[in-house]
Length: 246
Image 1 (cartoon, rainbow, N blue to C red):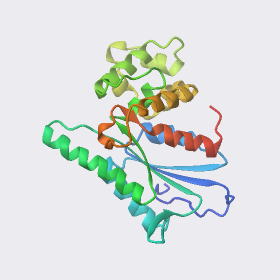
Image 2 (spheres, rainbow, N blue to C red):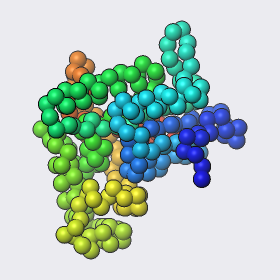
Image 3 (cartoon, rainbow, N blue to C red):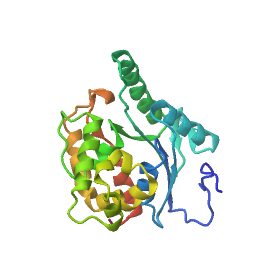
Image 4 (cartoon, helix red, strand yellow):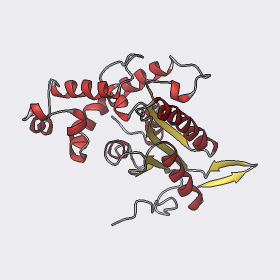
């Protein structure tokens, strides 16, 4: 079995023009399966799974980049070597109590700042990756910042798709047990049901995410920008450099 950390950043078989994307993912299913799809002959997409959220994710990314020489120091600043793009992908998971939420806000903001200081991009979601999935189907209001609502809406959307594929039909054979969180956090279901359904709607999701972002000003702290997902920025970059047709 190949070591997922054994990233071929210096593969001589690849042309110098091939860009290497290293994506540090919070989860082990949805994000890696989704982003890997955008790989083409022009870009290599390496998804590192299950690295946790916020600062844990960022520290893992920084450690790997420094250990492998992907981060260099020039004029007192950190920068990535040419041909490599590193992204951290994580959610802003809300805690249960006011004290924990306050600490979580600090951690969320500090994680983003720490990554950016080292030239690492962050495609964060406030509150979760499923917000990005939902934006493929509909607008999200500024008052919709409750993660269970995203799951509820996605459950209804997939339950009522006009032309479900064969894989979805199998899942819906027992509608009383069907819900998005339970049914689509599985590798095959996300790959063969969710991903094919959302990819043709990518442009709509990007447009809606940008519209959400336009509601917040630069002076706001990151944790205050909710609902919002910056997954669209990573997707735009993957499409720009990889040229994948969707």
